[in-house]
Length: 311
Figure (cartoon, rainbow, N blue to C red):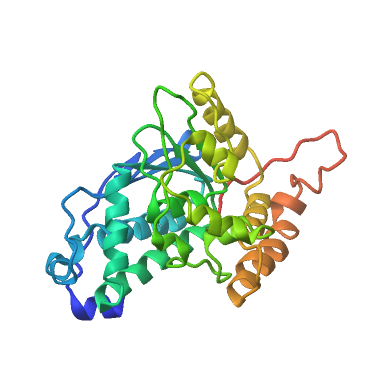
């Protein structure tokens, strides 16, 4: 961020907040506090983005990748610090897949420029912040979604993904060149490589795929978790939300951190995925070993009672 501040002026983010929402230009949060989850929606770019480094620098912090990811970063920090009882984030996108891919092509073509390099690094850092956020993430792919290129990373970072399977309302996923390594995780791998650790060639094959993935192709490729049809869609999402938010938040923190950081160990993964997750959250906190904890009540006729605050 210092390099960005030295080269262009970063204006304060414009945020409109109510009791149950938080609105930015490209990002929105809609809270369902009684059910302990939030809808996080990222809106894709328009079709009129500049495509040269000079034009981008002239546009400054209003350039979509810079503004959208600054807003996403702020939204994630808000959820971390100010919404401890929100345990689940349902990630949605809105916009045109082609516009997102066009933005990625512009970033790729100009990535030797200092400003574009800094913007890509900011995007990568924000995505890692999502990886390191102690909340569950479900990606919801529905008509009007634009999970493509850099926004596809949101789906790949999520703990589960649901993609509507309806021939009358087709939805798609698509890769761009940036998915091949511009946004590394804390383990040094891409999210696609982390997903296919045991089959590294699969990641290369998927990146080389020509065109977008429809629902059935995405499910066959292992890119999504579930593909309900339109008859079951609303019930599947509702039941998944209710089930996830009913579980011990501390156990979820440990499970999610371990699953998100498979593969090579780095200092980050050891701290966030191993030591913090297991030693601090699984075995020592009241949700596990307190009077009403899960381990204390294991094998007894009594039921565990959880404090649902997440970290």
